[in-house]
Picture 1: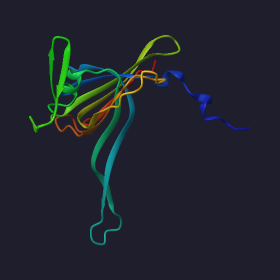
Picture 2 (picture 1 turned 135 degrees about the vertical axis):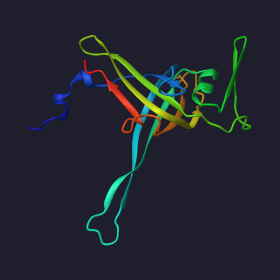
Picture 3 (picture 1 turned 90 degrees about the horizontal axis):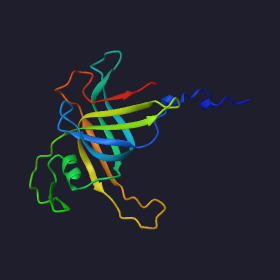
Picture 4 (picture 1 turned 120 degrees about the vertical axis):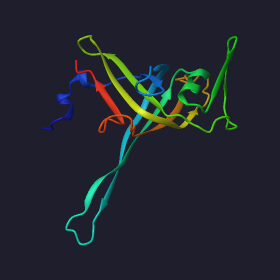
Length: 187
């Protein structure tokens, strides 16, 4: 008889649903809620090196650098959200009830890194509220906004805005704690 791998799954360890996306100038600054989102992928990418001097017996292997790539989609957004997310690439104006994003023409060539936080809040089997919080300390958007309008009659007519960011080491933080953290409520 086969043994199924899901026989020991603890439902309080599962992360289900969407997240709140927040952005700040740094991890120490106040985070700004930029709306609901869907976290599609999170990839920690260590780049290794190896070297062997002369006729030494074994090569030395180590960590050359680390980055994190995050692909996500914003479910709700406006021009002010885009301006905050992009760290200086866009500007936003609002007059009356019309918000406008301005991009292009290299008004600024300096793109500022941002701290990003993705918070998933859900209820566990016992009815308690639990969270999984992913905080990336220093990242810039590599792609986005990217979107395509859908038909009003689509089975899922909500248009999402896709984006990709890459995080790098934040040298102002403690060594070993410079890229990201994940906090997960256990109960």
